[in-house]
Length: 241
Ligand SMILES: [Zn+2]
Image 1 (tube, rainbow, N blue to C red):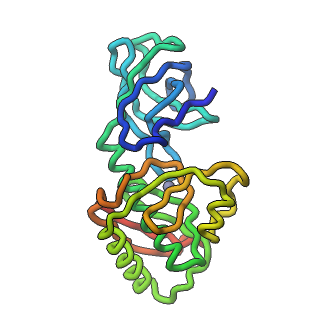
Image 2 (image 1 turned 135 degrees about the vertical axis):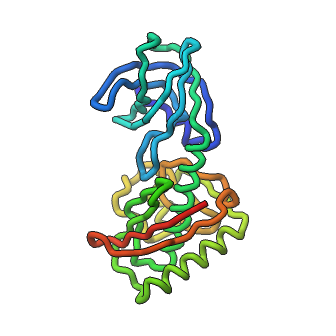
Image 3 (image 1 turned 45 degrees about the vertical axis):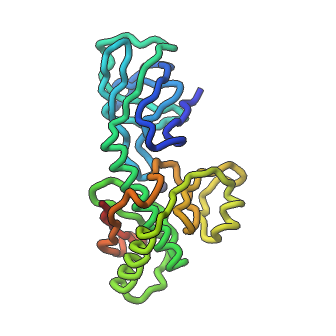
């Protein structure tokens, strides 16, 4: 069975009950798999959540979370308690880190969605939404002539978006429905299957499995700092607060 990804429902749900499925280990160490989790497993350019799992009154520190074949693996030292299948546990996600990651991710989406709409030759292919050194890589040849002018244009659009009361929404649509709303979609989406997209206000929806803010109001600023060619892609770096 696969772990239910409860974090997809609500970025702001930091605690939840769940049940042990099994405990095992891999090259990273010991991990436990639950029937459902609010812990975000590292991926899609977003860092792993950390936190604690309380089992039989014992606090177990979770240092890393990954997603493997449908299972979410919560890594930690479980030697102080025996965890049997079906055991109810309480999950506590580190709130500050989750919110910092959500800010970084939403800031990255805001920036790249604006870049894509200003220059339709560019398609975002990779995001690195870690709080330090955040960037997005784009495929395609930019149609702008002057990088500094383009960066200034993007930053102006970002400020405009931050000044509006912009909602951020995650929803499920098919790639076909997405294509109706935005012609420039990545070509690696599985056809026919529901796809989770994140939509910021009136900007186009973008595919994503991350945890996002509810509103841009939670961001003080997002600023593009530089854009440079790297291995055939355009890498645009950004800062946020
Ligand atoms: Zn994303």
